[in-house]
Length: 113
Image (cartoon, rainbow, N blue to C red; front, side):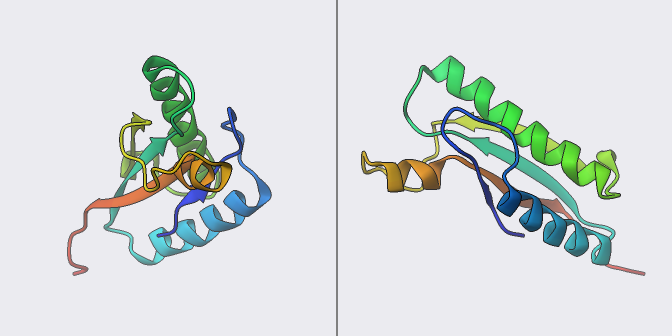
């Protein structure tokens, strides 16, 4: 499952994010026993509290969109890490863009019977 990315200080889904979420939804439909945790992340700008809230809104936006694509909400959980787990630590826009993301982690899957 691929990550999605957000604009600065935003949690609305860009066109590219929607396309990625459609592909993620197709994977979830093919792997019907899989459950996913959606992590919301932010760049380092802003307070810890603000970035945790923003990360939560980003994860929720991704979850809500997956539900509209037919994925059961019971298979999807969300968590926010705010700015705490950056994938890039340089202080420039290119790096910050990589940190403003929604990440999808498979938390359990039962073998198909």
